[in-house]
Structures are given as structure tokens and as C-alpha cells.
Length: 458
Ligand code: ARG
Image 1 (cartoon, rainbow, N blue to C red):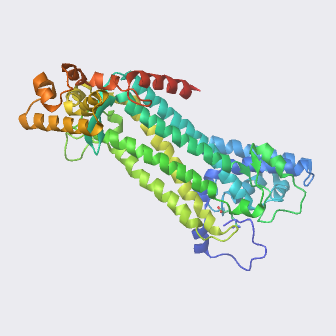
Image 2 (tube, helix red, strand yellow; image 1 turned 180 degrees about the vertical axis):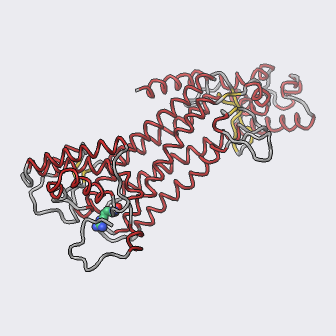
Image 3 (tube, helix red, strand yellow; image 1 turned 90 degrees about the vertical axis):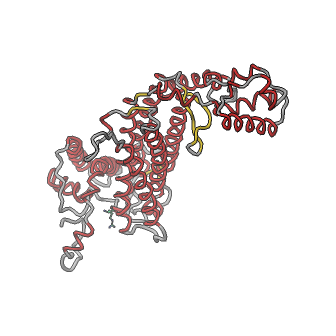
């Protein structure tokens, strides 16, 4: 195994110990950021005259070449290298010779690894935000296409009231928007350059940390070298924001799983996101949505894995910290897949309006509207609730509809009833009469759709 160190070692390390400590199988994902960080570091070392400008230029162009190889996918990852930093260092040496030995001046893998993961997170978070935005757009397009569709909405999975389908969809858009702001918020604290903290105490060499901060585009330079190399809060915050976003995606998935059942049959999920059964030829199973629901467990456990890893860990760097990466990478990549799959789902989702129709004719769904009718006539909330409750019971007992009741029958329940109350027994009316901000009133929903269309294209 190739290593950064070893001159003071008496004998070689145990082969099982080597196998146990390898990280290249997963930290290869940091290769790009290791080069980007190295380029800024070399430029700074050159400008500060810690290394010659010739060496700095050689290192920079060497790392740029490696960066191109990495981006093109033809970089030679060495499965025998201890980690990605070692791998890059060795390849650089093969490319430019002696000068490569100067790159690691005034830096340690301890500050380097934090730098690499921060650059990786900043990049990936940007991508996740873009993917969230694409999902939001797909949902808004789906909502707009079906903007007149009315559906039953549920509490306790029992039909409760009617809403516009678009209103339900825009609830998802709001949830996803909060996910973006949580990620943005994590970035605010993450955006500080740890490079130059070295092993833990800083360096006696005259480096310019502000310069690497500027070259790498960080908003700040970290203020304490010990904190810089110990800090993994940014991973916890990223995983936490992802866990919450995953929870949202799992709830969206579950709604669609329910809506796609034969019993509901509100929507048709595109065949490309379903699978069949090996024994029951009639089945069209929403496996991808079930997996999205299921994978959310992993997003939670990855967060808890890193929290447990950090619990009680003494300052500063301990090798335990190498293990922050697999859960981080897994959550980031799963989240990206989930967001893209949900985008595909809404792009191909078809609504079954005629199947929904009978469900929104259930007059019980308008019970609160009838209560509000009485309240508008100065009846107390309690009396109104009681009245409508008795009406619904009687109708259920006698197999009648509320709309079948005559004026005389209505007045048996409350003297304030007029025949016009029956106008309330229509889904279109129920949504239209809502007045409160944030309600399902079609004018409000349309305004929200317009607002989202505008903000999401920015
Ligand atoms: N591969 C290590 C990690 O991911 C790099 C840092 C190693 N530093 C050390 N002092 N052993 O954390």
C-alpha cells in the first residue's frame, strides 16, 4: 500500500490493517476537490514565496491535467493508495516529478480532508437544490394542467373536505421550498475555508489563508485551527437537511401509492416507474415509490450514524472521522436519485377525473360549509356543530341525502335554515367560498401557481 508517511516506521503495516483502513473505494469521489484545493494551495505557496513560482506553476498545471482526467473519467485510481490524497499526490509526482513533493507544504491531510468534503458538499448541495427546483417545477406543471380538478382531502385517511388538486400539489411545493432553505442555511455555516489549519495548530510558515479563501471562493476563513480540523457539523447539517427532505419525498410517495391503488384509482403512474408480479399477471406495482419511501430509512440512519460517530470524540482529528464519508456520499446520491425519480413521476402522472368524481359528491364533505352557513347567521359554533351532526346522522340512518331534505325538514334541525343552504352541497362551491389566506379558493390557488411559476424560473 502506498502511503504519505512511513520513514520512521519499523516494518510495514499489517495487511489486514491495510485492508481495514483503505478509503479509496469511497473517497475517490473527492478527487476533483482534492485537485481544486491543491491548485489554490500551490498558487498561495508561490505567491507567499514559500515555494518558487516555477514549482507553483508546475504543480498547478499538473493538477489541472489530473482534474481534466478526473472529469473525463480516465484518471487512474490506485486501489493500493491509502486514500484519495495519496493517490493524487502520487499521480502528480509521476506527471511533474520533484516539484510535486512541495505541494503538501503547510498543509496536512487533516485540514485537507475537511476542505475536500466541504467543497464536495457545497457542490452537491447546489445540485440537490437544482433537483428540488426541477421537482417543484414538474409538480407546478402537473397542478396547472389539472387546475380545475377537485379532490377529496383526508385526515386520518378518512375523506374530510374537498380541495383543488392544485392546492394539494402546492403543499408539496411548499415543503420542498423549506428543504431548499434548510440546505442554504447549512451552506452559510459551512462556507469557511479550513485550509492552512494544518494538523491542528496552524503553521510557522508565512502562508496567506485569506488568499486560498479567495481563490476557492469561500465566504470566510475558519478562525480556530483546532476547530477547523475537528468540525464535522457541516456533514451533520447536510445529512439532517437531506433526512428531512427525504421524509417529505416519502410522504409524497405514500400519497401517490394510495392514489394509485385500485380502490382509489385517482392517478395512473407511468409504466416506467412500476413493476409487475412474477405470479400475478394483473399487477402493476408502484415499486419505485415504495423504494423512495423505504430508502428514507437509510437517510435517517446515515444522519444518526454520523452523530453517533462524533459523540464524545475528543478534539481534534481521529481516524474515526474517515467514516463520516460513506454515509454522507450515500445520502447525497440517494437524495439526488429520489428527486429525479419524483420529477419523472409527476411528468408522466395522469389524473383519473371520472374516478374521482363520485368521491367528491359525498355531501358529508360539505359539513363544515353548512356549519359556517349557520355561524354566519349568528348561531354559535357549538350549536352549528351539533345541528349538522344530527342532520348527517339522520340522513345516514334513513339513507337520504342532505340535498333531499325539504325546507320543513331542514328547519326541524335549525330554524335559521333557508333553501339556499343546499347550494353549498357542491364541490365547486365548497372550494369557491373559502376566504382565508392560504385556503383552497381557486383565485388564491391560481395566484400561488403564478407566484411559483415566476419564482421557480428565476
Ligand atoms: N483518509 C483520511 C480521512 O478520510 C484522511 C485523513 C488522515 N489523517 C490522518 N492523520 N490519519 O479522514
